[in-house]
Image 1 (cartoon, rainbow, N blue to C red):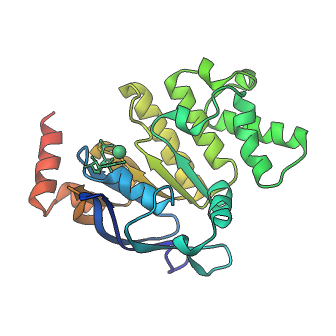
Image 2: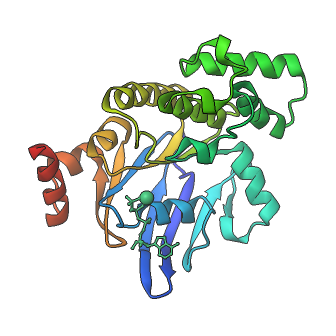
Length: 258
Ligand SMILES: Nc1ncnc2c1ncn2[C@@H]1O[C@H](COP(=O)(O)OP(=O)(O)OP(=O)(O)O)[C@@H](O)[C@H]1O
Ligand SMILES: [Mg+2]
């Protein structure tokens, strides 16, 4: 491990006209670290995630990423082609709704294989073997490889989306409510699986969730957002066990009461 961060976020703000999406957000993300972004609906979590992953142009601020050459590159000074290359190779993005992150009308195997082809793999047999292996890792049986995701359950689709994202060995994965919309038992299993993969692959990840239990299970550090601002940040266990900001205290206690 290195002492240098993978991602440096400085004073990111995004305004939609007069409305605040997120305001003045700064942090560093280190290799192997999982950061949870929590907060109520409308607090700016998705806005922030999209600004970090170059899916949305921030109004101000900078994000730099340490590429494999060891140098920091300002994401918003790269060419569109360079950003797209990063997205395809070094990064993953897991959408809340799997249909936004999958191609629903091509097979499960092709959904995974496509990402391998994007990084230059050409050998059909190898691609299929790797895809089969990854389906197994996300607990989709090999005999479903030729099925389209629209024939899958919600949980299976989400696991397929995870396989599609991780197959290229990304260094950084963005996730927006990866377990949202799934029923509780499926959520628990998926979280377990995600936690195992993140650990095994030494991934860095930024996980948006409104569910503190997800933050507790997956993340090392967290930031708590309200109305576009960060109201608290710190090690996950510290924030959840000993919240300092009144808003975090409220959030934690209201969860405990459920
Ligand atoms: N495209 C947009 N145009 C205008 N305002 C937007 C747009 N997207 C988000 N907003 C506003 O920005 C604020 C933050 O929204 P955002 O979607 O980032 O919240 P969130 O924390 O992800 O909420 P949720 O948990 O419901 O997904 C909200 O006030 C929202 O109305
Ligand atoms: Mg959101």
